[in-house]
Image (tube, rainbow, N blue to C red; front, side, top):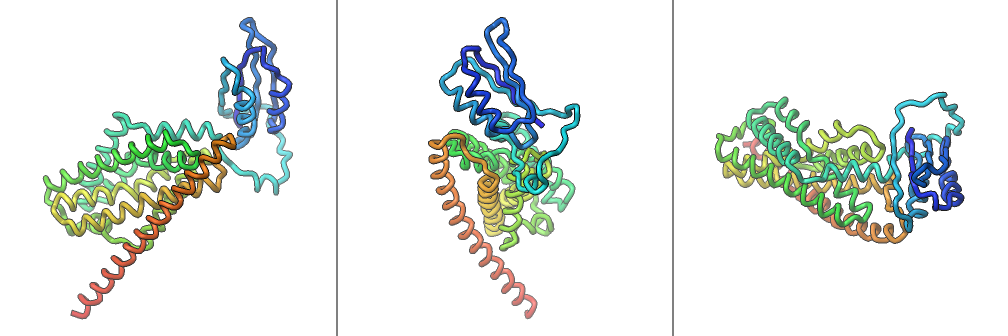
Length: 340
């Protein structure tokens, strides 16, 4: 459950405000009388997943009002226990979706380019590169746990769904800096260390195929679904890191060693994964109904989504064809070696 609390001046006409909010179907509500500062408080109680209609109505009615504040508070428990009166069939069809404002706060915070992001990216790149080089699966998994790559990737897709250009630029910058930093660190390690070209963990990041695209698409969809429904994102963050961090570290290691062909293969896997995660996340946000509030914003977002769909779709087709050709080449080479 969640509590939506609105504080506003007593001069605001409460009749249309209350009527619009009650249309959203709150479990309970309370309108406080004016206090000694001439302010009133409206409290609305909603089931988890509900309340977006009320928030949108409040923002529309308060557009020309100053000195108002809306706060969303999660409710851990309430008594007496609510009696479930909703029809089971209707309950199955009802979408479970976090509030747009909640999503924006959570996702935008993950797109910030700050010291913590840079330090975690650097540490995860070092651990991943060393783990790949030593064929240490545990180290590679540990690197994926601390990698902060989920934030900017999902923030870019979320910004595309809302048509928020500022967040798109911010998240794209953070993602590019993070990936570049990881590549630079692994490249330096590749130059400083003797790269173990027999490491199974390292070699596996140069083997690409159609399944590479499938894994990244599933990772992106799972991450976006987790975020949009308000579920903890730690595990899906690891899934996205699986798709992005190891091939990035492998590409840097091989490039530092001067193995440019293997580095290009790892780079192809990385490119497929970045595009697939963004495409799947954008599609998932769309299916879950993540859209702007006003008609004008929706019109702008529609153009943004169309452009992103077109760009990501063209890229994923081209990259998947390239991966398919590489897989065919590897299969033919293996057949020749077996016969020889």
